[in-house]
Length: 164
Image (cartoon, rainbow, N blue to C red; front, side, top):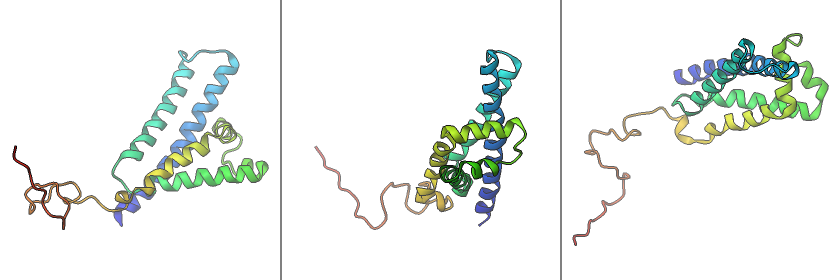
């Protein structure tokens, strides 16, 4: 239960990272492209760094042995937002928080380009792995002290070895 509460906290953190890091980074990158400035400028490097850190946090949560809620909840939110965008563009644009800032402009660009739909699908995939819903124990890791370290499935006969 505690690991799912931690997963809920990580889900909120990931949603905030996608919103602020992804939205701000994309908005600054778009502004750089419009101005004809390269990525080697201070603004370009900071925008690239924000996107890289957001992607790193997302990637760590995808493979880390934490609760699948950490990626499932933001993924479902992104897919729901994309579905709302498909139904009503105006309503989906109105629910963007902090609409006046560059963060919302970048997030709206991610929404209209379909990147949020792609991220949503990627984020829900770990929820379909049954082992992610169980806490890791010594037997899951192959460290069961009673079995002598054999990698055999319980209840199956031991394989015989042929001598040549």
